[in-house]
Each structure stands twice: as C-alpha cells, then as structure tokens.
Amino acid sequence: MIDTPVGPVVYESERLARHLGLRHLAVAFNGYAPEVGARNPTGTFKDFEALPTLLYLQEAGVDAIVLASAGSTARAFAYAATLLGFRTYIVVPETALEAIWLPIQPSDAVRLIVLDGSSDYSGAIEAAGAVSSTFSIASEGGARNVARRDGMGTALLEYARTFGALPAHYVQAVGSGTGGIAAWEASARLIASGSFHGPLPSLHLVQNAPFAPIHDAWSAGAATLLPADASDEVRRIAEICAPVLANRRPPYALAGGVWEALRATGGRTYAATNEDIVTAQRLFENLEGVPIGPEAGAALCGLEEGLDRGWIGRDDAVLLHVTGNGDALLRRDVSLHRVEPWLRIKSAEDVREDRRLERRFAE
Image 1 (cartoon, one colour):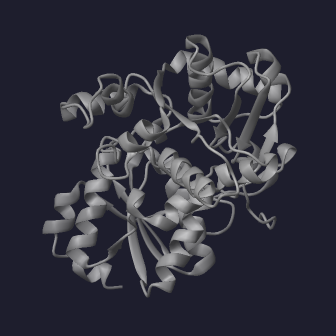
Image 2 (cartoon, helix red, strand yellow; image 1 turned 90 degrees about the vertical axis):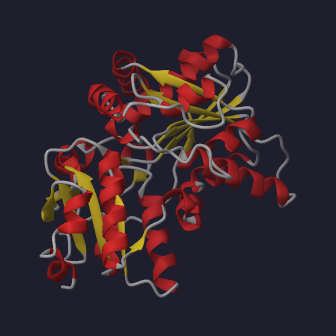
C-alpha cells in the first residue's frame, strides 16, 4: 500500500541537461520512483486526473461512469474507484489486460470489460459509448471533462510554484493530446491571474511512429485529422512500442482542442520511432538514475529533435514531462494485484444486441 500523498514532482535536471546542452531543464517525473520523490500509485500521471474526476462526478450526483482505456487510465481510475467505492465500468482491448493491476486489492466497484481478441483502443471507445447509451451510464467525458484536464495541468502548476515562472517550452508524449491542452489551459490561467508573465509555453507534443495522427495532421497544416483507413490504423498501432499513445480519434479539431492549443502556443509535433524511443529510455535511466516508460522515452526523443531543429533554444527554460515509468519499481516495493475481467465481449454490437447483458448491468 502506498500511503504517501500523490502530487506532481518537478526537479531541476543536471546530468541530462548537461548531456543535451540545456541551461535549464526541469523534469516533471510523474510515475513511481521514490528516488526522485515520485509516488504515483499506478505509475503514471493519470493518477492526477482520476481522483478529481470521480470526486467531481460524485459531487454532481453521478453514481456510476464508463470509460475506455489502453492501460494507464484504466489503472488510475480503478485505483480511485476502489478508494471511493465509486462504480466504474472500464473498457479495455484484450492486449491491455496484462497492464491492468493495482497496488491494492481492487474492489467490486471496479468493473473491467474486456474486448476479446482486440488491440484497438478505438474499439474500446466505441464499446464504452455503447455501454453508456444502452444502459444509461454516464460517460467519463475524456478531454471534455474539466476535472480531468485540471488534474493533468497540475504538473505545469508545480513547475510555476517551484521556479516562480513559466517554462518557455513544454514537452510531452500524447495519445489524445489532452495533457497538452491541460498545460495550455493552466498556463493561460496563471498569466490571466497576473501572478506570472507570458508568453504561453510552446507545446511540443510527441507521438510514436508509425501511428501519429496528431503529428500527421499538424505537419500537413490541417485543422482536422487526415482521412485514414481503419484497418491500416490498426496495423500501424500494432507496430508501436508505446500503445498508450494510440488514440485513433484524439480531440484535435474540436473547440479548445489540440489544434487550437498548438496554434495558440506556437507549438510543434514529432513522431519518434520505436528504436529511438528505446535509446532515449536507456539514456534517461543512465543519466537520471530511474527507468521511464516508452511514452516518456518518446517525449525525450521530441526534446532532442526540437533542439536539433532549433525549435528549442539551448538557453530556454524547458519542462520535460515524464508521464509514466511502468511497473518495475512498483513491483520492487509493493504487491500488485490483477484486476480480473467483469465481462468479456467481442464488440460494441454485443452491448447493443445481447439482451442477456441487461441483467448483468442491473446488478
């Protein structure tokens, strides 16, 4: 059991900064690594969004929600749901099942729905939507949920609290891009408060090639996602090493979405290869002394490319967000418990058409 309060950890890097030639590099390390003070109970910054989201919905009178996940969000919401006893239906593709564990025994409030034979996060999103509409269960809301965005924005707030200023650049790997939106919103609020001066930090959002819909659209100068064949998307998703970054329908074009955030901040996007991500993970662990997940390795790749291209100056203040570091250190320190499936289905059509599920969801 992890009993230390969870909060953002931001520290000044020395060895990695020196290696990159940066005068001021801050690392927001929001996984589990007591060596740097990070104690997120499920190993990623998703812990910052899950608890405030459930508390927000609970205060609004909601008694159950449904959401989709590719792994890390599922863990964070299952953990928060167990703490609060808040009934939470979580839909995941079968390939994510091994990543669904908790540092505490999961409670009956957690109802894990598995898409058999699937690796498609978008299929999980569709099935979660079917659960919501068929059985009148509130959707968690994703990027549209202000509590979720505010929770994710705390890493930027912690930087401002620690250093008394805003960074010039904010670097993060993204699937939906909600973390980038959250950093943009948090920065804008700090400037509007009069306590901090602008400009807004430039967003540097990184994806995992060959599946990079946000990067592809932004690089093409498009205000909407580029047309894509679903089967080709599924194939490319299967090739990436950071599956938590695989969101086929990110909130790119909607009002207040990723496109607006990038445009407002003079942002950039990147697509890191698997090989480069693994190299970046090794580099970070060698220099900073703690392991990071592939999604964080992708963020470091983006930082390196931004420096090489001159988009990030060597004298600029940079915040590199390490959004997770897997389970190796957690397994070292605590016992992890699998979250067992509550229900297995083949697709969203099962939810809509199998009348036998009515009794199950009425439990």
